[in-house]
Structure formats: structure tokens, C-alpha cells
Image (cartoon, rainbow, N blue to C red; front, side):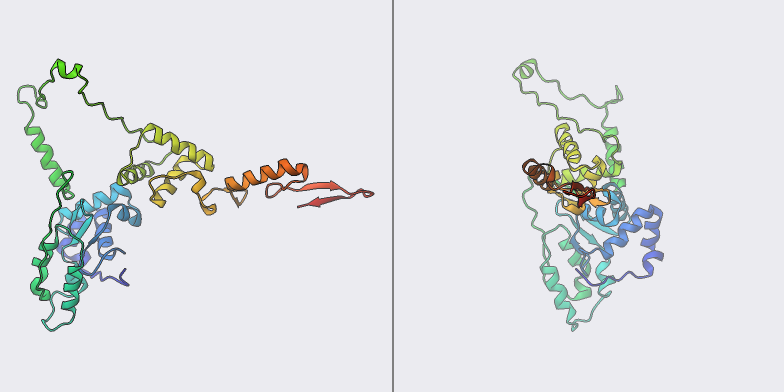
Length: 321
């Protein structure tokens, strides 16, 4: 991680800065974050998952995605969902220099850092932008792997609107609706070749903040884990077992960034406080109950309770803490 990042005054007053400001505060925050991100490098081409951006800016998944789309639309950066690589187009000029002399030793360091980048679709475009400014000699081309599924770079809102318009133009001009797909024959249906309907995702439970729910859904999606009524019921049960509201349990889940979370996995400082003290873990409760069954009324009591034992030949009781 770099020790510092340069953010020039023209970021706020330049043409790109004014365009970002017109897009709203989310666009400005995401742009400033991309320049100073703890995952960034001086080349401006680096690995930046949206999940990290959402957490570290406090915008959530939807807010971070909206701000990133605005930055793409303004020409500030490019983003590839498949590799989760971002390219801030002018960042190398801001962080290093607009150009260097051929004898500057930094040119070799820049070439070395460029050679070490992971494969991504922006390698060729980055080299074309800076090869003359930094006297680079070796250009890399992205060898796109055979895709298992079709992936696309993150699209801006304008591109999504264009796609919606194209879909409207493809509607049936007679009925005003989408063109009907060819009907399946009766033998096909009887043969049981109909694909089963996908289970619907449960709605946001009562008492859970919508932003927390959206972040949890995004985390499950990133982990390629389904969200079903059974999964939600298990989360409710674990939250009750931990003595936590479901909203707090899901927020802790998102903070940990794990695929699953059980009450037994929680650390003492993650559990809700009881009478000003951390909640008693399950193993401690079980230990105390076994001791109580063995030692009777003189067994160890929960924290904050006392036992009074009368002394022989004395009216004053002895108090055990």
C-alpha cells in the first residue's frame, strides 16, 4: 500500500471535476476514493473489487456502483467486472509526472510495475497512453481466457438506457408487447423437459435496514451462495442464538465478509453486552451448568450474583462473591 497519494486542486475545478460534480456527491466520492484507494498504485491500473469500495466509502453496494457508473460516463475511469480491474485514465500523469526524460531512472521502474500487472483488458490502452511519456518499450496484450460465461465491462447508465430502447424497438408492432417465443410442443412438456422455476429470493425481513439487506445479498452473490428462505431462516436462528437482532447479525456478517456465520463463531467483543458486561459465550454457559449440577447450590453463579451461607454460632451471614 502506498504511503500517500496526490490529489491536485484541479481535481475539483477542472473539466472532469465539474462533470463529476454535476453527477452528484457519490460520483465525487468514488473518484476521490479511486485516486487514494489503499489498493491503488501510481499507474492508476489496479485490482479494485466493488465490495471493498462499498465498505471503505460507506456508500454500500448500490451507492458505490452508482458512483462508479457516473465516473465511467464522465470518462474518468474504466472498469472490468470480470477481472475487477479499474483504470483511472490520467492517474499516472497525476501521481508520477505528465512526462519524464529518457534518462530518468523512474522509467525503468514504471516498465517493471507495468510488466507485473495481472492480465486485464486495459493493458494495451494504458501502454498506448503512456509509452511516449515514460519511454516504455514492452507492450502487453491481454490474452482473454476462454469464457465460461459471457462477461461485459461495467456499463454506464447511458448504455443501459440504449439497451432498453433497443428492447422496446424489438417489441411486436401489432400487439405493442414483446414478441412471443415459439410455444413448446405438448410431447416436450409431457416428457418433463420444462425447466423448474427458480426459487424467488425472500424479501427484506421486518426490522432489517434495507441497506444492510442489500449489502448482505451482494456478499452472498460475490460468494456465489444462493439466498433462499431456508438460508434466511438459518440466519434468523443463529441471530437468536447469539442474542442479537437480525439486522445487527447481518451487519456483522457483512463486516466479516464470510460466506456463512454461526453464533458459535462470534468473538466476545462481537457479542451484545449484558448488564454492561460482554455476553457469556455458549461454552461458558455449558461449563457453569455442569458445575452447578455437580456442586449443587454452592456452584459458581453467573457474574454479578452472590450466595449467602450462614455461619455456625453467628447471626451474621458469610457472603460469597
